[in-house]
Image (cartoon, rainbow, N blue to C red; front, side, top):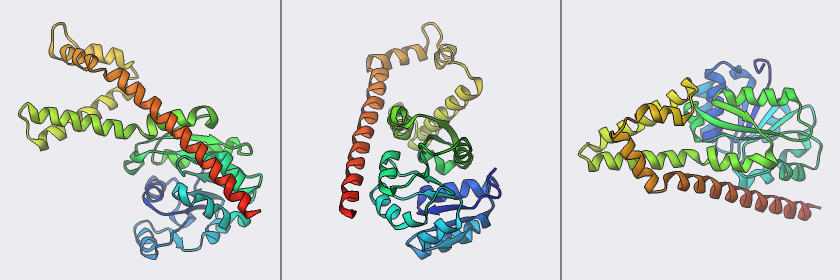
Amino acid sequence: MLQEKKIGFIGSGNMGEALISGLVLSKAAKPENIICSDVAEDRLKELQTKYKVVTTTDNIEVVKKSEIIVYATKPQILGLVLKETASALDTSKLIISIAAGVPLAAIASGLKKELRLIRVMPNICAFVKESATAIAAGEYATKEDIALARAIFDSVGKTVFIQENILMDAFTGLSGSGPAYIFTIVDAMADAGVKMGLSRKDSLFLSTQTVLGAAKLLLESKEHPGQLKDRVLSPGGTAVVGIHTLEQGGLRTTMINAVEAAAKRSKELGDMMVKEFIKNNKKDC
């Protein structure tokens, strides 16, 4: 699907490289069909050497030479980059934004055009090709556009298609922020192992491998987590005592509250971003 498409990346930071790496190494796209831009020429030389992609410091060149443009910039500068490239954008191009917290409405407002827009929210696990990624479509995006976006981001993990205005904040609270929750849990488990006499190295390895193994079993077995939990528990055994202690500490309630709080914060940041875009657009008029 992507083999003959010209794909451009505006912004070649960590997430941009993760996507380029995923596309090239999975052979979903040809390196010569990928063009990326960045302000740092040393960074571009590094990417060209590693992945054999085309590079440039000119964002307009990326837009003109691409059928699919991925805006992989920080949210704070997305408005400026959109303004810079707007004249070269039209309905012949699929525009994908991965700028965290910037709603499609803000992008559409900034561009002032009817364009094929897609908003994507990957997470940090894209760096190891295991991202949980949400994809939302703008008014003029087609089913083929959604399929193309999914093909790009499936190269660095798994994707789900959601309704932005209803579920993107929920996704951000759960999977966008979720790796931080898991890292905290693993760190706490490792501390517990050290407290019980294990070395820091062994305890951290065992905690990490335990989480990895549990996640893989959950995905591959397709069993409900409650069923798998019951397979570990035995009457009067160690695991049931551990679960009881977790419940006494309010783990389940705390986790639900954490996801809810992060989702609400995501909405607050999104609303702030829309107001900022509207204010900047009025200045330009």
